[in-house]
Image 1 (cartoon, rainbow, N blue to C red):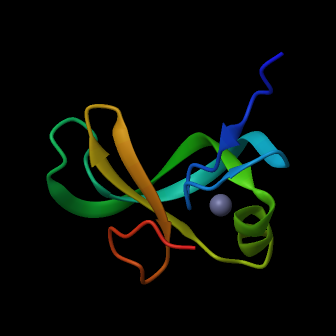
Image 2 (image 1 turned 120 degrees about the vertical axis):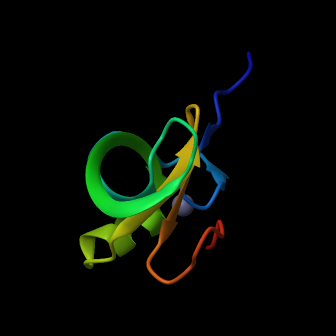
Length: 85
Ligand SMILES: [Zn+2]
């Protein structure tokens, strides 16, 4: 039987211990239709987080988001546009 592997929405790691569908406020730096840069705003997203990224959030790291047409990238402060561990 195939084991389901979940992927972290922030760092992209595939792990077994993923905290699924955490409802988290993301600081968006683009509007989400065409990806144009705008004044940043908060938007709540359901994210699957690995334990490492979850830990960072618990310790106060803000999650930023950018993207368009449903393809959003999520990353931590200061790591502009980069998927970073
Ligand atoms: Zn992660």
